Structure formats: C-alpha cells, structure tokens
Image (tube, rainbow, N blue to C red; front, top):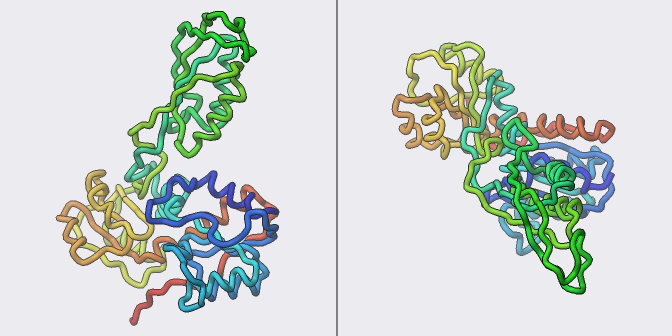
Length: 365
C-alpha cells in the first residue's frame, strides 16, 4: 500500500484545514509514493519510538503530536527532534501527525474521551466558524437533478445529520456565445434565453476544489456560471472540546474518582467542589484552559482537561468544577482512535500500538 492512501484517508476524516494556526499536522517525513506494509501508532514521537518502529519493521509512524512544530534550519542531531528526523530518514520511516485537526472532529480525540466517560448526547463545545462556504450556480431544468447529485456526492449539502440540503429558485438566464463557442443550447452569435434553476448549497471550505470540479464535470454548459460566498456560520460538527451528559447524575467526588480510575491518573487537580450532583460534563483533551468560559456558558457541571495554571482555577468562581487530569493522560486513548479508523478502512493493513510510555511527566508518591 502506498503511504498516500493512508494519509489521504486520515485527512478525509480529520482535514488539515481544521488544524489550529500554530499546528503542523500532516506528513512530516516521508515520500507519499512510498510503499508501506505496517504502521506504528503512538501519541508522541521520541527516539524510543523510532527504535520501536525499527525493531518491529514499521515503515510508518502515526502520531497525535507532531514531531516538528517549528522550522528546522539544520539537521545536526543537537536535540531529540533532529535526531528523530535523521534516524527516520536513515531507516526510510515516514512520520505522520494528526493533531488539532483530530481534536476538532466528531469521532476524534474528544469523542473518545466522552466515550470512555460514558457520556451521551455529545456535541462540540466550541464550534468553529469560517469553515463553511456557499455555492450558487444556475442549471437548465432538465439537467438540474444530475448536477445537484454530483455536487452532493462531492461533499456539499451537509447540515448536521441532514444531507442533500439545498435551495432552488426558478428563473431565466441569458447568454450569447461568439463564433468560437459550441453552446449546449442556442446558436453562436445569438442571445439565448434558458429556463434555469438557481441552486444554492453549502460545503466545507476544504472541499472547494472537489465541489467545483464535480460541478463543472456534471454541468452541460461550456462555461459554468457560479459564485462562492464565505460564511461566518459556525460548523456544528467541527470545533474544539465536547460536552455531553452522564446517563444518571452522580456525586462529584464519585465522578472524579471514576475519572481517575478510567484514565489511570496518579492525581486529579481540581477547583473547589460545589457539593452538588453532576450530570453535564465538558471535556477537552490536552491543554484546554482556553475553554473554561465556554464550559461555564454551556452550564457544564465539571470540565475535564489538562495543563490548567494556578490562577485559572480561580475562574471556576463556584460555577463549575475544573479537573486537570494531565496532558498525556487525557489524550492517551487517541491511539485507539487511529487504530479503529484504520482497521475499519484497511482491515488487512498491519497496525501496531506502541508499547512505549512517552509521558514526560512523572510523580513522586
């Protein structure tokens, strides 16, 4: 199997367009045309992970955290990142990362956290804006159905749990081709009037090229008239963090102890307890302190995340319980996300879950 088959699929699930501006997800080391037969799945890329990949015969490392965040100006082996890149190239091992883009989609990092906690009715906590665009085009009546279906098949027309969403208005278009044209209807040099449908639908902006290609291939006209509008609407299926509900309300201490057990956490740091039952739970894998206000606004009883600073615990203000379970601990099940996605799509492809604990944080107990 070619490497690009794996990366293309992963990016269809978690598009690179959904990553945060500071991030560096995608193929970091390797040739997309490279043939691979086995991949190693990990949270982080370290020298120990490279050694594990070499020992297991894995030609690809799939990680959550990118090995390379900033630009590399030299490869001299002066730090672990450079040594890992050098070793990967020497042993022809590709490195791929799916980071904040995997955080931002249903079925990704935060969905897995919700699953582990047994949450129901889960939704994105902070939906992303600016990820949608609107297509407007004009189609002859008789060809309208085929063009619409082609555009829908390319990924347009999805709103929440609905697909094939569009709006049409009948009207009359006019055009005149010069002598170098072969119009679908009408004659060169003559103004022609055609009964058409104005067809409007939305699509994720990262699919624009695919949607326009589908439109122009299915449309009968030589020159297809269309408009693309950027939208400020939030995308309810894309964004950071999630919020859901426990099947039954429980004591907050019991919930924290349950979370500690599920995530195998040495210690849970938390803001003052409210001595209330909890049911609505917000989560964000990794560093989620920037979502405290959104969790409070969504009326969550507890917000489970990591990397909260001292002063940020004051932001709870008795409205919520903030629980810091550790960065690695909150994202550890991301390996399962990769494994489940890839085994479902490529059941015969060999995958290994790394046995190396890459958590750099230790506790003296």
